[in-house]
Length: 454
Image 1: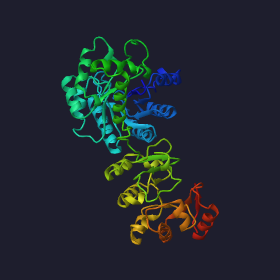
Image 2: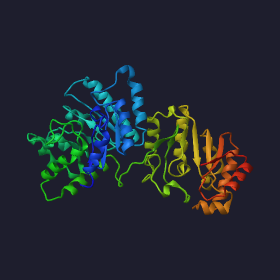
Image 3: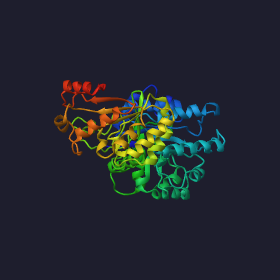
Image 4: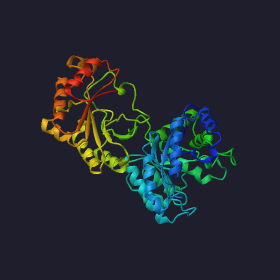
């Protein structure tokens, strides 16, 4: 088994405190290449994020319906959950939902928090992991008829009619160890009703171990036993490797990690600042650009398959706690001024919340904006960083080949326009870009602008 995805595993629980390294190692030996670690509250969300980053796994953050916060601390805890969702390997909202089996909280409170999670997931474009024990019908009633994000129904226990509704709405269905139990005929009978591309395999470790491990602590290395049962229920001659691959690919799509639907981060943390990634397009093809060798930085996925919508960018910025950071930097994996209107709207909205804003740009927007438009754009920001990366036109054309005609002239024009405004400005150069650093330094002095060497 070369690829496997345990799509729901609680490695954050104390059951794994003593041997977590071995558990992760054993899962790899068993062919489980990917693991999703959902959380139940702020503490476990932070723990899950730590584990995901340490072992290159994935995590999710949310309040489980049995672990909702007290009213007195609810907003502070909600803010903390949002901070965890800014972590690079935290890629989903979950697990949230309803639990009418235990009845720890009254339905009204559970539904209220469930809707907050649904709205958050949609506003930031993250998949949603849903718990529905004893409340399968109500969960389907509460989920909007049309959602813009994948929905994963964890440890699904609905009957045939509810399952038909769920798959008709495009939801993913997660099945666990009980599928292997002798008396689970009802659950096994659902497998033929679930499209093969909507089925996920999960362990829910440390709970619900499959046969033959009942009574023991469950762990992701046991995922293969559930996969073997699914293969048996599919009833064809497919190999266990192919079965595992189909289920792996399903989970990759469900969590928007698959190359075909990979979600790029719109907002990401770097140092004590928060960055906004509006586009992956750029007029230049600089030899030193990180885009030549990676799809992101610091664990974040930043290469947009296509530009994110205006509504998603604005709702993402609105949803996240941007006030807690030194500044909001519009930089991205491309040139942000290529989305001028959205750039101005986003920066203005952030400024209205009292957040300092900075524009990182190649300065070539004078090739498609008038002088007046450039100045209007600049006035939306508190500061600007301009990529210089050369000491003259010939060197710029060599170091930063561009689709813009006469790019150096446009860059120098942009710098002159910046100097007519009152915003703080500096130029920057990449140390190993191939530019003559002494001449670049001398040019910055002549321009009377601070130089940052990156």
